[in-house]
Length: 278
Image 1 (spheres, rainbow, N blue to C red):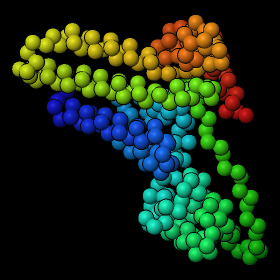
Image 2: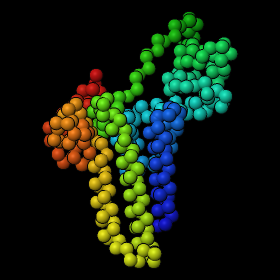
Image 3: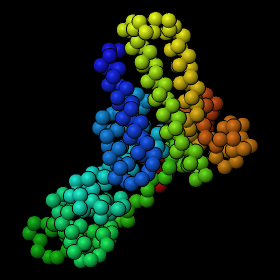
């Protein structure tokens, strides 16, 4: 790997770590989270560890791709407003409602609500949305369509699509701590490989083969701390008595692949399909 390629990867890893801290905070506002997700998606910062953005959303955060896309869209709506109007949009539901208006009309809708002396809410935005266009040639007034209720936020799911018990969610969300360690180890491995390829004299006494081999093993060992799936034996309900998850309620990807029976894996797949159908 050439120096400029290594520098690009290191820069991407650093930016990814910064953005993931923003998301983990959550977490602070939906706008920050949505903008962070958009940058990760658009620059493909997930590519070192994940096959695609959908896998990244599911495995890293336990969120479905549609839910992440919804956050990205809502954040973009707010970001495009004048700064004086952005502060009025405090929730994702408000931004989602405002997104139904044409971009050029959104600031005016917010201003109209403020001018009335009312609080900007999703319901207030909905009342100020322009009526839908009627079919050409039909002069009869039409009733506005009944809006379906906004879908609830996606449940926190593990990498197999299985809902994570509420009491295990704090532990699941700590996976970003593990990912930060993995990113650091990846940077060290990358720097050593670059030194080896460039025959950097500073590292003359380093046994690259041994060092890289040990780092690969450390990386693999640390990754087992990263939760992947709810334990199929105890379902995360009585982990203290479970030998499969060893009291954690969650399994690593390695343990899922090597210790879970094929029948349990197939059951998860069938259950996930049944959930989608319903």
